[in-house]
Amino acid sequence: MRSYADGPGGGAHTPDGRGGGPPAPNGRGVSRRMLIAGGGLVLGAVAVGWRAGGIATDALDHATGAPARPRTAARAGSTTSRAGTVNRDDRPRVITARSAEARGGHHHNTAIPAHAPGQPVYYIDDGPKVIALTIDDGPSPVYTPQILRLLAKYRVTAAFSMIGENARYYPGVARDVADAGHMIVNHTWDHANLTSLSRSQVRAEIAKASDAIEAAAGARPTMFRAPYGAWSAAALDYCASMGLTPLDWSVDPRDWSRPGVSAIVRNILHTTRTGSIILEHDGGGNRSQTVAALKIVIPRLLDEGYRFEVP
Image (cartoon, rainbow, N blue to C red):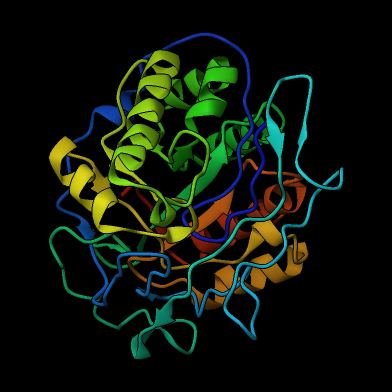
């Protein structure tokens, strides 16, 4: 089971089962609701862009800026399980900056950042208190079904950013996501940091994942999320050429780092506002804290008048 702990539109991977099925949400075209936060992004090893969730330096050495040594979940180092997938519990993050408007928690009346064509989508724009929930690094045979049951209970639709390798291992779970009416997003074949790859390697990472997801769920994704939120010119160019909308996020509760249920809940409730795209994970390790936090957060946000839509 492929496992990465991703803080950005990234996450972990968990393969499962075989099967296929048409995901209605995946056939969507680029939505008019998707907007991009103003801010730059970079090409190369370090990407700098605006986020609403705070400065993301989770897996970087804070003194040198170099990637921190990966931590593992159940075993030390990268290991291969019976399913043939690698378990890693941490991934390098890119350095990002947050805009002034994003500081200070709730900003229900703050205007959503203006659209920047061709850049990653950080917010949606579909009216007051409309937000999006995204779930990364699955599908997982353990946590994805739990999250699907929770979403069904509250009639919430989400976007699942899937690792191609995991979709190949667990096509039955991928199909369940699609059959439940959720959107499926391409999250690369094996959660690679695209900024360190050549153009041909970037194309292969994305194309191979689309093929695997289509085989498992029945339709090709129309959106793409870069692992670690690390966008490169090659990735954005390929997305443009293939009609894939680049998707990022604006609320990152760092659930991948397992900071505790209360910390995840507090982060989401404090930073979510109209237009927010919330990042959570169903793959990449033990996601029991994520499931527990969503059981609190989803009804609380609904009670506050928020409405969930897919990007």
